[in-house]
Image (cartoon, rainbow over all chains, first blue to last red; front, side, top):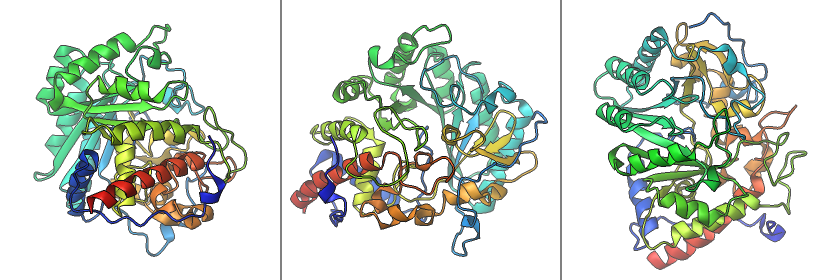
Amino acid sequence: MTHPTDETETPLPELHRPVRSDHPVLAAVLAELRTRDGETTVVAYYEDAP
Amino acid sequence: MTARPRPPACRPATRPDARKTPEHVPTPLRQFVLKVHGRCNLDCTYCYLYRGQDDGWRDRPARAGARVVEHTAARIAEHVAAHGLDRIRVELHGGEPLLAGPAPVREYVRAVRRAVPDGCRITATVQTNGTRLTDRGLEQLTEDGIRVGLSLDGGRAAHNARRVDHAGRPAWPAALAAARRLAAHPEAYAGILCTVDLAAEPLDVYHSLLELAPPRLDLLLPHANWGNPPPGLDGGPPGRHRPGATPYGDWLVTVFDAWWDAGRLRTRVRLFQEIVALLLGAPSRAEAVGLSPVAAVVVETDGAIEQVDSLRSAYRGAAETGLDVFRHSFDTVLRHPGIAARQSGERALGEECRACPVGRVCGGGNYVHRYAPGSGFGHASVYCADLERLIRHVAHRLEGTVRIAT
């Protein structure tokens, strides 16, 4: 498959974080993000560690 | 430490002005990747470390000695105290860190715990190919609160055909036994890292890995760059070329849909989770996407302080800093141009990425995948089209879900 050429300049949708969700995977992500909210600086970790 | 002098990196992995940018404020290191053993019992056919162009590992001692361990622990403690850090991660790496059994891993972790001030939480993880993880070894690691992460290419023998020992014997039977041991000890199971292989069917890889019950999973793109493209993609001049083939994006999209639509959380898939987080406006915790400062550093078996190993896939010496734990603090490391570049967020991106509508989520992808021989790291990723394919797909799926949720 190739990436459609007419989409490459299209902005990503502006999505607002819901407080909660019935979607089980999204709910898990939201729960993790709440812990992230309390951090002054969120850092990126080396990917060769789980 | 062996007295091998460490030359400065021959070509800094950044624009030379990155550390001089007035607004750049170094972020303290939070992740210390400690090489316990510098050799591996496997000879994986795609290994960027032992089969790559940078064979600097040959000059280093096989094991980290007591002096290296003690100095490293003291340097970590110094850094934690200087910055008042309340948590850090310690990753025990190799080579194969369990090559000499669990004892050296335990000793390293104990040394760090002894040295680091009270009040700092240390998460210790050993990342292993699993072939040396015995029942007793797992028990001992667990006693010291050390989690275990596995490196696998899938959950079946066929997926792991490229993971063989030096005699060509498959690693899979022993790795599978390790995965089963870990599944029976979830408190010690950190997760699985799996490098994407286009030759494997994505859903078969994903579902077979789920059978091994990892609490976390990450799907890693093979280390590659514009001069050394990954299987299935062309290299050539760097840039955001469109239309472009997206075999990795397609592979990952297939797995994403299975993860997202499962009806329950079977495992946390880091890459997908981080893309969702970024699309919702949160910063990333992973170097694969986003613009968060990378807070990782490596200590080699001889005490040399280096950047992450993946840089070695770009060119020989790319990971070197010329620093070591005997003479240098980790604050000195923060001033190294290569480290500073990876803490510079958008400023480390090339022009094309800064103008890209997907850039705030993609973040240029993994830094090492941006490299082009002769011009460095200021480019789009060699996986640019694949990342855009995946991110736009996740955005589309997430948009539908968020609309329903609100």
